Each structure stands twice: as structure tokens, then as C-alpha cells.
Length: 145
Image 1 (cartoon, rainbow, N blue to C red):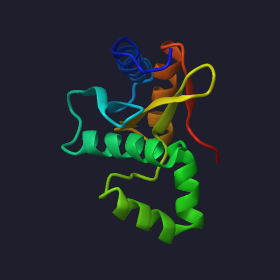
Image 2: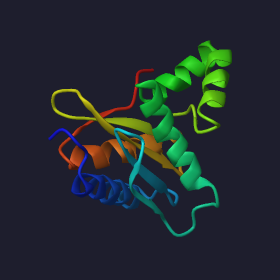
Image 3: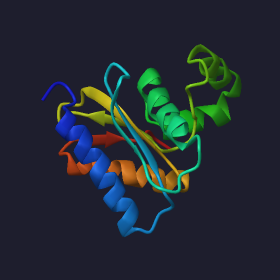
């Protein structure tokens, strides 16, 4: 598989939501982007706040734009705040530098897209993303601590 299919994106979405339900997470917004950064699937559960989808997109888009999971971006934000601020300007504000933005990789390691989740703690958002990606038979890359 070289491109992220709609079926795979829908599996990521459904299984991310299943993980959230099984673990009693707060209502989530999930955005799945393809490798171009175009939306492939998205959902906002009942009860999410107004801008949760934008936050989820910012996590995914930032990861995709910088080629690293948002956990790595979070680390860089602590170490190089001016760099992350400048990147945020370059991406016109579409950068949320906290965990929950996970690169989607093929078995060979090729970046196929990214998923961003927002609504619970950043760690729980990331765990839901990883669960959805794994259910689709793909590899999640959340970045390094």
C-alpha cells in the first residue's frame, strides 16, 4: 500500500473512537490527513468543544509538515521555543506542539499521512491515535520523548 486509503482512514477513525469508549476518555475530535495534508476522514464526538477539530488538525498537520510526531515537536518546543513559534507562523497557526499528532507509516516506513486527536489528555489522545493506526495494519510514529 503506498497511499492512505479511505478504508484505512475510516478504520483509524473508528478504532480510535473505540479505544476512547473502552477507556472512558472525554469526547474526542479525530482528523486523519493523507500524505498531502488533505483531510481523509474526521469526526467530532458529541460533547466536544467548538475548536477541538481545529486542534486535532493542528496536531496532525504539524506532524506531517515537520516529518515528526507531535511528541517530538513538543520536546523541540521546550528546547527551541523560537523555532516552534516561527514554524507556527509559517503554518499559519496550524501547529499544535503537544502529543496527539501521530505520523502514519507503511510497513516500509513511508509516511502515508497523519492523525491528530484532541479532547482528553495529550497522552490519551496519542494512545487513541496509535490504537486506530494499529487497527488499520499500519505503523504509528508519535515521535520521541
